[in-house]
Image (cartoon, rainbow over all chains, first blue to last red; front, side, top):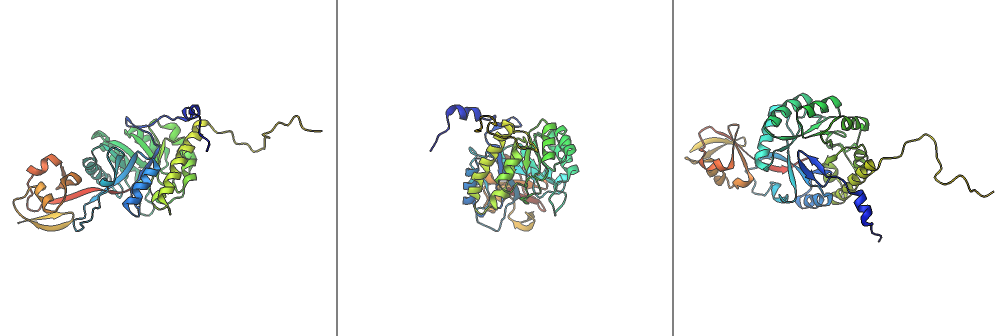
Length: 269
Length: 67
């Protein structure tokens, strides 16, 4: 096997992902939902190399004796917990879940979702802005799940979000990056980190998404619903790294014509 | 006995009782559960000195897998 020269590794070295003053090595953030079992989830998280993992706040099931909390499987010295407000349809509900998550998770971070429609799970951007303003005032680091609309993204930044998280496509759809232009525009106009959240289905989706210049990707279903989540997590880790490196490298221009790669001179007569 | 609502279900619990006592009664580890009493979060250090009252609506939540 060939090895990579140390100077090449140094050349490829990336800056960390910094959100709300916290540095993360990995630009891949992952959810912990929908895995077949906890053992598979643990191995997939490990393969993903993710530092940040999302969790949901739900009632303890008092009738079951089975261990069902997820915290036990997420060592605090390995993973940074990001509580979400998934399933909340109003600002008030999302604020309530965020406060409960803060108590459960020992940090002030929230992946804020205010859902506006059961069919598409698209965000209610009015509710999202209202909840963001309240939670920012309460000292939360708000990472807001939003659609790919620039104006909403700008308002979320103004409202004090630590990161803005536009979707690639609807949650759990696996349709990939539907509007690269919108994502690039959001990235070019905002200063806070842009984490694309939702819709990535496979490694090429992750790679193309990172090639738009965004700061990271958050995904769950693409790993959990893969036939082999551990292998898909392994692939996603590399796809995110490859897409990020390709964006930093600066791609060649697109042309409508061919340009030869070999010299046109020195041909035999 | 007190009648309280815990996670949406009406329950009879022995009186007097603190929130810490309620968790013990339900076999829950206070380190892994967040307690909301009548819509107000009760932080862990206060659980042992916060009484449960007749008609309380209590939510006990924790982290589960999610995206």
